[in-house]
Length: 306
Image 1: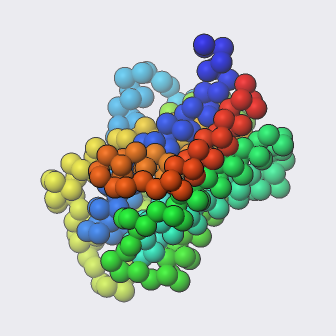
Image 2: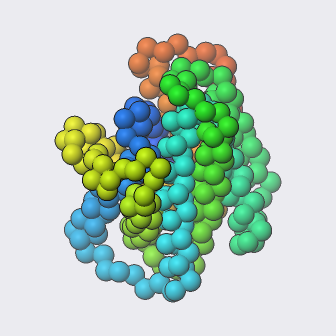
């Protein structure tokens, strides 16, 4: 059994991250109605950094030896993928709605594979492209069909589309940079997660400190920390989505081709369906078929490599 699982640990990590992000996305969608994207991104990042430092201290992992170029790529991937990408995603979620935002986010996996092909020379076999296409088609079909929880209270389609596209580009770029840094060094996924989060959270902090059109003071920018209830919810969500989720994502980037890892981490909408069913939502035959198609794609990705 171990001989089968070990070569697929990157893919398994990616799917586990997708499940955690599916659960947390429901909570973040609700929090986003009260907490601005920058504040939400900063608070979850800060909490996850604390958890990662504690974990590294308990494990006794010393700072790894890493070259300047991989380190620079890793930090840049955090700035682009986490700092800018997550903020853009939260903005799109608030202005466009979950369904269309998730649909546009499906551009991230093929963009990752294309960027990796052009700049890193990473080539995927026919099975990999077929598996990616089936998985993305199944996920897109589910997202397009489902309408509950997708209506924004303040929709701005054009602005939302721009934010979603920027989020997809940022995530794809961050994924390729992170994969290169992990593949060309001995840094562990845990350390790479911490470094990416520090870089991403720092850039968000700088953006929070900039004056804005609403003339908000620095105190008001960080007012989320004044609510014990909000911080409790964010802490629990950050533990699953940011601390564990990005750690698993980094594991996937280290042990799988970036296009495959990004595709599997984008299957979060599939995991939302059982949650919606448990909450009493009626699941259509089309949604079930979409899941089956995506599972076929995942099967091609898994067994094509095993």
